[in-house]
Image (cartoon, rainbow, N blue to C red; front, side, top):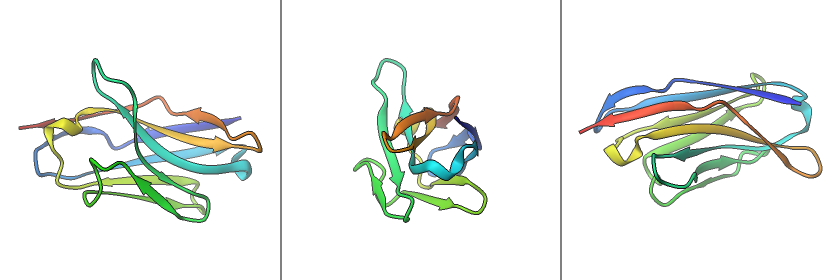
Length: 117
């Protein structure tokens, strides 16, 4: 079992920045890739960014050049630095971790990000 606790969401004006954190605990030695998804009202959950255990990253086209995902394995924490935020970035952001040989997914509880215009 893995527990994921997110922090860092909030309200920011367009053009501003926020940094999300996701701390993992439990059976962390079997964590593979970690990342962030987001969901806006009335929309499906979408991938934002992922980072492998080796540090390879992948981003949604909508956030490339603005968001940076990073991972501190010593602290069992993944971060999402969000810059040049837009109102369309408003969503609940969920951290996830792939775990074990079957890559079972654990999810955090979500953190709200609201970008005002």
